[in-house]
Amino acid sequence: MTAETPTTPPTRTLYGWLRLFSSPVGAAAVTSLLALVASALIYRILPKADAGAFALLTAFVQTVLILGGLGQSTLTQRVYSRAEPGAFRWRTDLDRQLLVILPVSLLISLLIAHLYQLPALETLFVLAGALLWNQIVTSGSMLAANRRYAWASALPRLPNGLLIVPAALIALIPALATLDAALAGLLGAALASLALSWFGLRRLPMTGDRTISLRQRGYGLVFLANQTATLVPDYLLLAAAGLYAPPEDLALYGALLLLFRPTQLLQNVLAQVLTTELARAQRPRLGRILLAFTAAAALIITGGILLAGPATQVAYGGRYTPALTLIAFVSLASGLDVLETLPRSYLVGRASRRVLGYFGVSQFAIAVIGLLIGLALVQEWGIEGAAFGAVLIFVARNVVSLAGFAATRLQERPRSTTQ
Image 1: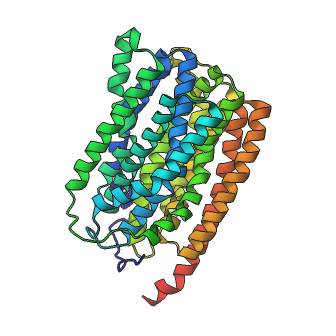
Image 2: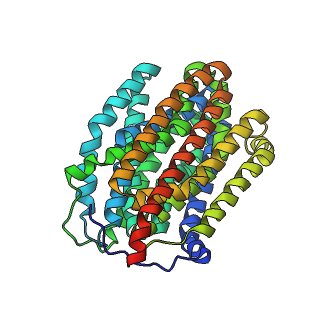
Image 3: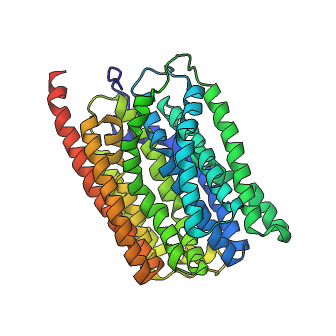
């Protein structure tokens, strides 16, 4: 993967970064608000057992998306960002990626179905949902690499946003208040989102004839290792809780996590923008933006602890009452997730293959050890154990990301003085 000659974008000041973030954050805010309302309706209307199953199955979709996706969406953004704009054939890359990930995604879906005794239709939902989301997320990565940040930020969360339509129908027609109707509505929303992603890509001036090679795709395993450290606290610990906690507790945990989803989505949006901009820039000054991320993380933690309890009561009509301990753990995990955004994006966009390799191995070790600890905590404390396990993983992730960030900055210092 060869990089283009670095350029200095007009984003070296904090004000410049804020201007750059404004459009994608606005697009993500709209889709996220729709997603929040839609999911709140689903959790509020479905019977608690069905709501817990909905939380579990959507977590399975994200699990297969990440593990079966083999790091290809992040790899695509790195490869596209480090080449001249318009150099690749996006449709060919999407088709080949689907062929690469299909066997692994199928095997993981079947393994989950065996472990959780899922019916055939629910297994099909998990596999189809993961493949659809993979195409949508990768399309967003391609758009982000071409600096179409508003499109890129909206697409990955658009299926949950468009869920507002079937959720409204379920609310209006009591006979539709079933798990099957909610799952079918989510798949329909994902299909509509995929069609919109192709529309956005067709508008790009991508006239090149390059494609991502099979050798490059193998390097996606490094990014898969990185993503596993995200998968465990976001989804696998919830899935693990499904083995021990009753469905009502799963519904409570899923409902609380939903209220913190906007912070996760904000982190994803900022990471998309930062990855492309930092990959194409000369050695940027990042002191003020690092302080801004630190302040945002502190605000999320404090605000979550103070407001998540009342917000849960209001959003779900008093149906769920999370304990303060659970709220504190989820708030802390959300803040630490945002805090890691800058160093992690810097590594994905700029780090050498050697540093990325060490980073990937470290993140994978965090994921495995964190999952084992999380399983023990879940057995002991239920959903509170899952939330505490997520906090431990995010602490370790921040330590590793900051270390890799510092190492990369030191490597770049001699080059910057000779330019």
